[in-house]
Structure formats: C-alpha cells, structure tokens
Length: 238
Image (cartoon, rainbow, N blue to C red):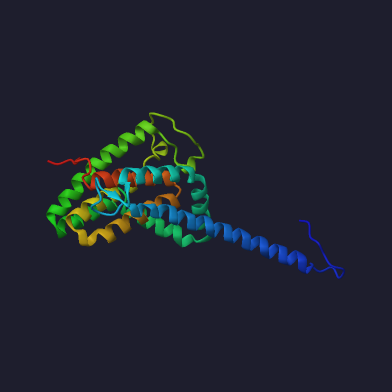
C-alpha cells in the first residue's frame, strides 16, 4: 500500500484526512443507494384501496403502473447494489427480511389466510380465491418469461423455463401479498393501511434477499393488486 509520510516517519495528516473522506464517501454512497431502494419500493403506495378503474390526479392508474414498472426496470442494477450494501452493513436487515419473506411465502401466507378466515369467514374466502387466481397467473408468467434471479449473475430473458432460479419475473411473494391486501381492503377498509404496508415490506424483503429485481416486485404488486381488487373480476372458487 502506498503511504505518504512526513519527515518523522509518521503518516501525514493529509493521508489520514484522505482516508477518512474516502470512508465517508463510501458510506454516503451506500446510504444513498439504500435510501433509493426504499423510495423506489414505496411506489407501491400508488396501490391505495378502491381506485380500480379510476383516475387519480388526472393520470389513469394503468399509466401510473406502467411508469412505475418502467422506472423500476431502469434502476434495477442500482437498487440491487444499494440493497446489497444495506444488507452487508446491517446483518439485522437480513434476518428481518427472512422473517418477512416467510410470512409472505408458501407456509406463512396460508397461516395468514387462516387467521383472516377465523376473524371473518367471508373475508377469508375472498382472500383465498384471489390469492389462488393470482398464484396461477403469476406462475404462468414466470414460466413464459424465464427471467434469471439476481443471485444467478445471469441477465436477460430465457423464454420458457421450469427451474425456479429462472422464475424471477414477476415476484410471487409480491403478487400474493398485494392480492391479499386488495381483498382485505375491499372487505375491511379499516385494515387497508396495515394490509398494504405489510405487502410493501414483504415485497421489499425479496429485493433485500437478492431473490428478485425491483422490477420483479413492482410487476408482482401490479398483478396482485389488480386481481386482489377484482379489477379483472378474476377469482377461483368452489
């Protein structure tokens, strides 16, 4: 390592200050990237309840969704870098993300639905129907698109793929969480903020765990919210 020293053989003040500035610059960059990750994920706030088929502030909901997805795709790499920096600098974030991912996963989500069913049978039935419909559509899109997950190091779209490591787009956790939130907000409007807030952090956890790109979770949120709010009239029932 090259080190500039003073006449006494001790490191010069100039060297020390340069090192400190470099450290602060690195920390600042990581902080900005991490903040960008959270801000980008907060585009999920456009999925407020009861806006299906309506326009907000003169901009149709579909236009908002298209803009959010396009912006997310552009910043995928930057957001991933920020997420990696955040996780590496704060191990607790990794653990919290794993817990949230479990809640929105194949084991945790049925438990949530069961709890909803106990609280309100009609709500539980509605949530289950829309989650099943969302799951079917999400899986079909995953197979057809064949996008590699971030941790694979591979880019692009592979087309028809059956392996899970190429099922990045869209995020299943995000789509199912937002589908559940949509169903909850319809039947219990007073629970809307909590439902969408939980869906948002579950979606964020998938980016922080390097399982999905930002655009994957935004696409999942769009799909899940649309089905969850009944915008297409899709559901599975028996």
